[in-house]
Every structure is written in C-alpha cells, then in structure tokens.
Length: 176
Image (cartoon, rainbow, N blue to C red):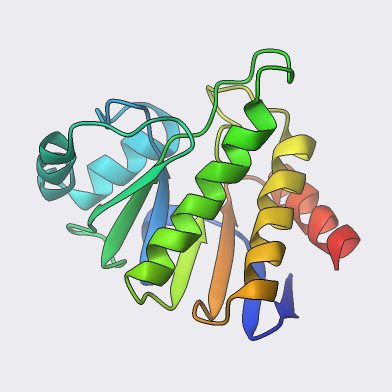
C-alpha cells in the first residue's frame, strides 16, 4: 500500500529490511550501538563488520536520536541507527521519544541529501511498544515530515509480518 503526500511516496511493504535498496535503511538500535536481537542483529549480520566498526567509533546514541554509518555489505548505502524507547506504561514520555526517533532519522537522511529511506517497526519487538500505537506515531510523523519537506521522495515501512503490514496500512489510510 502507498500514498503520495506532497512530493513523497509513503509506502508499506511486507518483507526483510536487510534486502532494501533505498539510500538508507533504519536500524532499531540500542543506546550502545552494540548490535543485538531482532532487526538490529539482522542488519549487523547482513551488513558485515564495517557497520560495527563505525558504531564503535560513534560510541552510542541516546534514545530518540539517530546516527548514520555505512551500509557495509547491504544494498542500502547507509544505515541510520535510531534508538526507540522501551515501552513501560505509556506515561514515561515513550510516545515523544518514538516520534523523535522517526523524525531525527528523517532529518538525518534529508541532511545527507538522501532521497529514500526504509524503516522497520521501531520499538515494537523486544522493546514492547504496542503495535497500533507505534504504527500511528510512525505514520503520523512521516506524513507530517512529508507535508513540510520535499527532499525525501520515498519513505518505506518494511514490516516483518502480515499483521504488522495490516496495522501500519490501516494507520496510513486513517491519516490521509
């Protein structure tokens, strides 16, 4: 499913983010940029040691912020590492931090003159963010960004399951 907002296509696909050919893929990283489980581990395994070498030089990334490294062996030229919040109860600034993770990833891509970016469902795995709430924040942040910025031509959300694809697609339909 896709929709055009201003000059940007926002698209939902079911697939594997490590296979994306966009200029950058986003990694749902931890604050230490140390690799890990889920998307983070898959990106590091597929991209090879060059990504971890640059992560070690950067040193870390606070929750809600984003940093960029090479894509290593990936098809994408860059990996934008962002740290989403660990969901506890929804009243500890989680929504603002998740929005910031998406927004700062988009700003970093725009500042690097990238034209396309692929996101996973940040914080919905081991960080436990409820899928419906996370999808709403992700899509709203991307729609708002596309309304104000025309530099990024494609914002793709790569969902790892049919259920997540349906949830994210539904949020896009509701927001446009």
